[in-house]
Image 1 (spheres, one colour):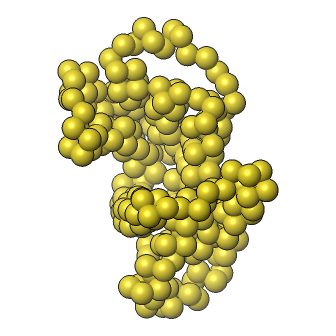
Image 2: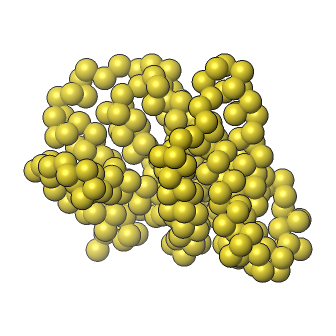
Length: 261
């Protein structure tokens, strides 16, 4: 929970130094939607991050990788339920193929490992976390007419505020750890890339192509994780990595087409 709090505090510091003007300009619009914005930041940022980190203590990486692939499914179902958006056969096929790619990565190509999966509290927390992020993605469709940076600033503020009680609980339970030098370096990287740049890009992506299609791209996370592991940690790139990459990219390509021609 300390990471959750410090990452969003870091984002707010970046915004204060580099992006104050958009927030000031958008404030009249943002002020009218504070309830919606606070809920989105609390659930989509602080809630998702917190549950994801806790789940890692109770379940395996295999389970987490597979369950994270449920996000686009929840997005498509939620989009249809909330907005009656049309889901084409091609989008359904695309989602199914990308999920298969995620399963291949999570099981290292040993699909028979799925038979041995067991359901525990960590799996349940992961499903709830995926539901929260899917809800956040769907909610972006009704975002206030403000700049992505102005809206993101209040999302981050809500995430920081709601993460403070989580840290207090962590302290009371005796699990809090003050970051070391290495820990602060990790927090800085998390703040700049996944917390700041990636979220702004994702918000603009949802606005451009809609939540249903944007949600499919969540399945690139395990693929990129594999690539970075090879580049940074010198891990080997196996045949199943290439196979999974083909499935995920192919599924995204198919999901971009609304009808089979």
